[in-house]
Structure formats: C-alpha cells, structure tokens
Amino acid sequence: MAKRSAPEVNAGSMADIAFLLLIFFLVTTTIEKDKGLLRSLPPIDDTEVEPPIIKQKNLFTVLINRNNQLLVEDEQMEVKDLRQAAIDFLDNGGGTNAAGESCDYCKGNRDEASSDHPDKAIISMKHDRETSYEQYMDVQNELVAAYNILREREAKRLYKKFYPNSEKVYTAMLEEKEKNQFSKDTILNGRITTIKELFPMILSEAEPDKN
Image: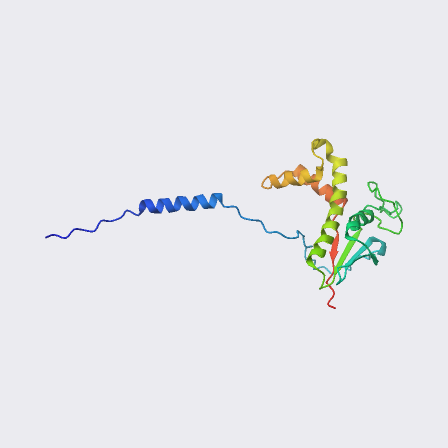
C-alpha cells in the first residue's frame, strides 16, 4: 500500500500576517521622549583668550546648602520669593549710555548697585552634595520662570499683533516652532532668536561643595 505524503502547510500567508502586524505596531507605538533639564553647553573654545572681567553687581549668587536652605546674595530667602528677585536683577537696567550699557527696554529700578544690562547679568547657582533633588529642581524652575516671564513680556510688546488670540505670545511661538519642527520658518526662528537675545539665559552652575 502506497504511503500518503504528509500535507504541507503554506507558510506564505503567515509571513504576510506577521509582516502586517509588525508594520501596525511600528505605526501605532509612541516613543516617549527623554525627560530632563534642557541645557545647551557652550562650544569648546581652544583660543587662549582671557575671560572678561565680571563686575560683582552683574553677578546674582544663589546657594542651596545641605539643609535645603536658600541663600540669595548671602541672605536667606524663601523659594517662592526667588522668581521676583531674579526678575528684579535681570530687568534692572542700571547701565549708562556713557558706558554703552544702557537698556532701553528694561523696566527695573535702574539701581546702580545691580545689573547693568540683561546680556551682562549672570545668575550663579551653587548647591551642596547633600541638597535634595526636589529643592534643586524647585530653585531651577523658579530661575527659568524668571527668564520666561521677561521673554514673554518682550514677545507681547514686539509680536502681539501676530498672535492676537494668544495670552502667552512667546509660548505660542515656541509651540508653533515645535509643531513645524521639520520646516524652516526663518521668520519665526528670527523672532524667537530676537526675544532670547533680549534676555539671554546666562545661568551658571558651579560644582557642588564636597563637604
């Protein structure tokens, strides 16, 4: 009696189904973005140029000690008051026309003992190794918020007519750039650059204390 041949299974359709499932998961799966602090490091400078002399009044010192206490300009301060203190420093505009440091858009007190101009105002932040991460983040958020508030003010002054329905013009500009990140909108990018140059984020973080 002749042996019957074993039936063969056509695996071609299974491969097609597997390929379609692979495409489906690739299309529908969302990849989470990395979270963290966005900071742009300065480019490496190999030239032997002496660093410029920084006036003490253009330096705003922020220190968080091991007990999570906040010291601003060597005086204890609550975190809730840090944002306004940073705004007052950045927006002071105490420079003079004679020194070429006057700020015609600053609305601060123009105190001669405080910063001359936003592009010269440096916030120096330092923390202890035992500082809690939560306190460190809270201080960081308040300092960044100070810059954003001032940038928002200037964006409204310069570009509100282009965003009449937006309460936060600078935020709307950044959202528009994010939405159209693959297209080169030179006008929008130029406006955002202008705002950032009016209040550049010069935030220096020193090495934490070892003790």
